[in-house]
Length: 146
Length: 146
DNA sequence: AATTAAAAAGACATTTTTATCTTTAATTAG
DNA sequence: CTAATTAAAGATAAAAATGTCTTTTTAATT
Ligand code: FES
Ligand code: FES
Image (tube, rainbow over all chains, first blue to last red; front, side, top):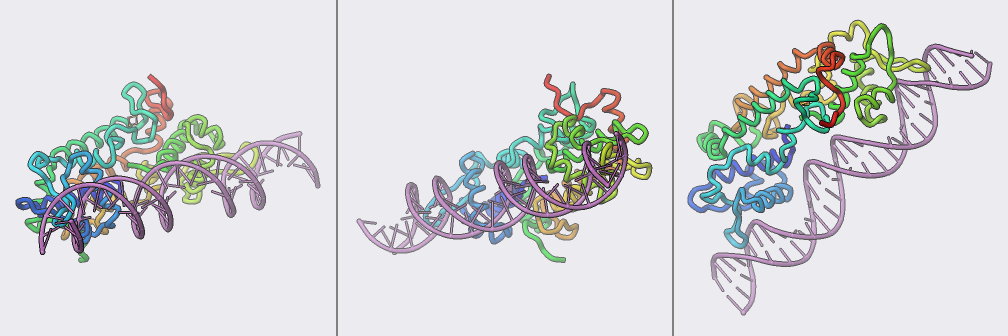
């Protein structure tokens, strides 16, 4: 469904949020240890998100990534789009060059419904909300063996 | 969502079905021209499906791919699983090593719902039914520019 | 039997995705 | 100001997915 980059990106940002108490900044190394993701690869993703102004960062000692006030209401949909683009939300399920109402593929209507359902879900989920789940211990960002 | 291989595979099989009147066999070349897919790549996919007994084939002059009687009730879900496996239906949306009820990721419940919804849809769609849409002209298997 | 046509199999090439390592620039602490 | 620390940028590598070409096998037709 989502690319690896997107999976790491989402987990990283949720983790940043979950620790984001009053100007605390988190280094890539810490983040990646916590979410069990490859360090340099995840760094690239976060750098890209910073460029797109979805997260903030500062260099130097005690630097790291954090969420600023105006980034507070980021939705999961924004994050996914920033990393994976909108092919998932616009493209044809059977790979036709364009998804079209007038010349639909045989699964168009159903696929479109699923797609829109997914987009709705992702737009209703804020990172803040997801982070709360993690903070409260109801959810986790790295595999815990049974 | 689906891999390219899966997209081509689905389109190819639906096309075979749409032409499958009384023992007619279709060559890869014809199929790929019709569905606008790369020939040799699609051939590989069909060969794999033939090995898994989801489609039938014969070599030699007038040979090609076709659907036998016992393959008639193939569901779209079977096809997707045969090509892409079941990661889409079993895996965690955020890429945790396992999707788990007891140690869920923050989107587990919603993602699971989407996933199951998708599986249900794909299991309700028979290739026969999708092919009918194409035969009747309601749907297409290759891009038609507006 | 020989020829031909087509899938099957295998080898190879390209592109994209994922991952790692190195160098540079910015910022803070001392 | 200097040293230390960290993100940013750039270069490289490895793996996976996608795509193409060649050879082999099978089966029909002549
Ligand atoms: S045309 Fe295929 S999903 Fe719309
Ligand atoms: S644990 Fe992530 S989807 Fe179930």
